[in-house]
Length: 205
Image 1 (cartoon, rainbow, N blue to C red):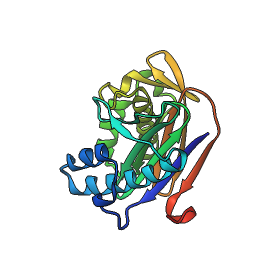
Image 2: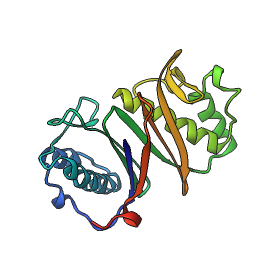
Image 3: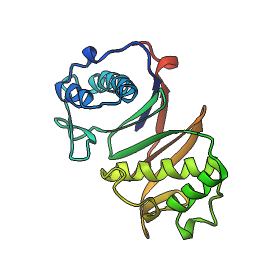
Image 4: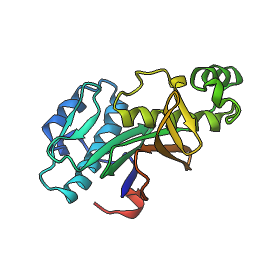
């Protein structure tokens, strides 16, 4: 099962983060707004992880991607946009992305379209804000699945109907949907059901 947890920042502080490696990583974030939303994402992530394994510990790879270092059966991924965050907890490798649907000028749309849409994809996607944000989240979620972040040209990532991969290697599945004013996408290797949980609405911690 893939569990997606969505939330918005509220009252939590960095002093409530008990995992030392996470706290160290959060203190390295210079942008205060980004730090604040990251604090909330990790606060809730750790809460839900400890329901699965009370001794869970996190670490970060060379791309600052978080992973569970003492339980190889749990996989995680995080993303945030504006004051909102999302994270995934799964029993398989996972990459998730959340992006606010911004308003772009025609010039900005054209620039972004040429930057992220490959020639093969141009017949499938229009040059408009919704398609651009959808494409971006799918491709970034795939790069997060690989664990390389935005280190590759997004045009190299190809979307094939329900799959996504580098160039002709459509080696992963993706799911994409719109929620409020955001697009959410996640990529994974094995088809599996998922559950979407709005933390503030569905859970009281």
